[in-house]
Length: 457
View 1 (spheres, rainbow, N blue to C red):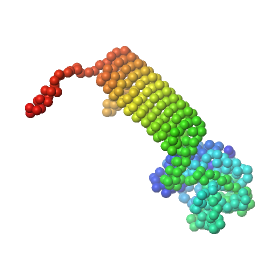
View 2: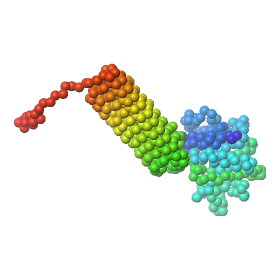
View 3: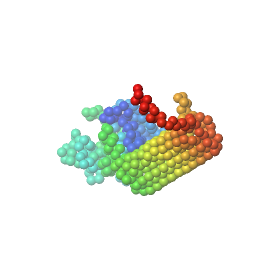
View 4: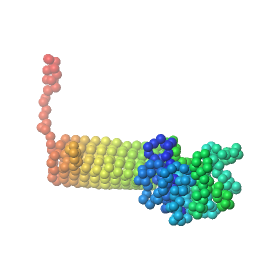
């Protein structure tokens, strides 16, 4: 699409009551402005100009490098904001889209349809509109047949105009030449002393130029001005994501109790149980069962894995793994195929090779485990001395008995056997048995003697 987009993101967003700029608040894992820029790009518009003002230094850091930036240091209305981009439009080609940075729900398809209508009508101005169940407070679209002849604000509407339910969504396509020629004609002789972008429509009508409006879904055109609307946008985006996953072959047992962020990928024949939360750049393979009560952040999970009641952060999981319940995989964890991580197991920055098992009640940190290793209940890698972290290496087919302490740095070689209750402080050679126990002593009758002594006191 041979167009340029101007994104209005200079406002203060005071109704959010936040130190964070409004457009940086997140819905479904992405900031509002990320959603808008992503939708613009998905519509085929690569040239993007962002108008910044309030706390611009924070917003700049979050923008893609290919974005052009203009600044509106004084808030003098939407028309004034677009004026700041005029010098950047001189070298641009094609039509110009103007859209607000707080409208994350306007889909790429709607933008494409809006542009298609704009080109079909050869319009100077094409407005995105919607039919509002309750249009109070919105600017009304006034038509003469298909041609749009005015946008009337609530305070200026006649009784008849106030009954109109088609409202202005605040998103427009302009003929670039028309926009550049008429921006200087905007006036601020109104109560607010602002330059209104909607006045360009009146200028097009006065010049007898074609105008048009595309009616979109009302829910889609919602802007986010406060936390309530942010929650509504979150709900809409999540629902849209879940619907797409289900159409792509993912089973979601209860969509009302499942949260999947925008950039998450889930392959077909995977089942998401209630309480599943998938965030960031997470990728889930096919044929998995995830949940109930699983949170996965920025992680990759292979095919046919079963995971329940577990938190996984920045980890990579192979195929056919079984994890949980109540496991915690911290950043840097890498599991090969057919690994079992059981209940109340914590794994941090460790690599565990194919077929190994950590069934329950263990901590594995800064470790490398070979193939077919068995970690007994209550085993911990003692990787921290109060100042530094140290590695533990366990070879293929090693067996670590229950309640063992592996004091790093240490290597347990291939096929070694660590007896239950051992505290291992030295490297163990291949196929060796390591035992570290005090002598076992039984004192017969000791309890009875103790009781007798207590009674005599």
